[in-house]
Length: 137
Image (cartoon, rainbow, N blue to C red; front, side, top):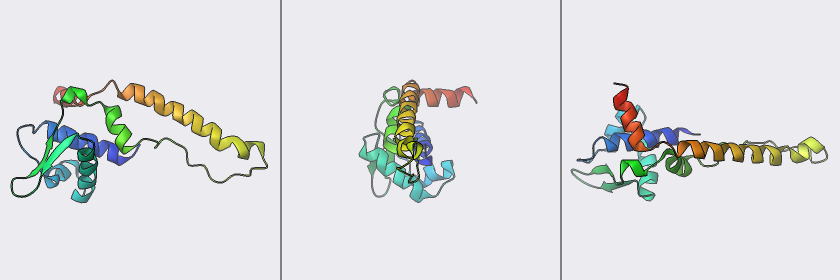
């Protein structure tokens, strides 16, 4: 999992709490304590996949484009981090039974782990995230 996943959740949650108005990438980056360029990269990805809309110019910014209960964390994971659990195996000795098979074995194990992660993340929506934020107050 990479930081784009958490920044996407942060950005979408921020926008979800501003449903009646546009928010700038600067405001979101201030909330997340990261450089606005990093947020703009994530926002571009979210826009490409229809999670948010944007308007350029004065009074412009970003706005949430879906229903909170329709967006689950697996949806976000797939566009930001899919395959992130795949192990990075160095080149191995193909003459050795271990070296010749380790990458294949580990990839199958970690692909299974990612499937289980997906099953778990599907149970959490952005509405759940918003509710948990208010519950913790």
